[in-house]
Image 1 (cartoon, rainbow, N blue to C red):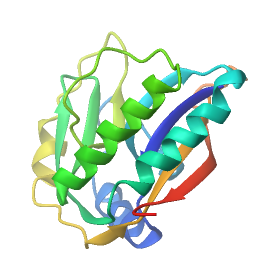
Image 2: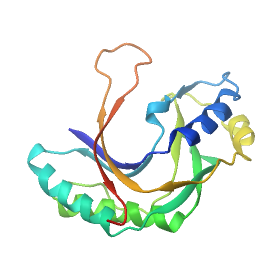
Image 3: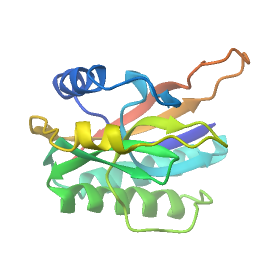
Length: 186
């Protein structure tokens, strides 16, 4: 199954972001992510064999236990080339980076084949570019530059299953299912 560790923003933060995204122009050629896809991916694991799940569970629980709760808020925006438009984070960036490091290490120690490790950049993807097409992201970046959400406590680490579209229907989005959640700080 396709898995990742994540921080999920609460409904109040999602509502603030929903309002900001609704005000954006829709003239560009972007695929907008749905609200169920609004999350901070901490460690993307890809396909994980069922036999690794018990050890992954144990190690993720330990990672959560050793990480104190912290506060985040949605803030500003950025992009990865023309591939993705995202909302950033503010608040305890050290806290979210530490949780990402620990989730990544937990997956590796459980035997999950992870991609090459990189410094974590907290981001929540709101749109993706269409492959092979150029979209000018500057109007979106300018519109979201001053976006500042309300702070919330991050007190859980979540293991999420990503169910990719299979119907072939254009515009179908992945479905996300929280498999496990562990409280931070024990």
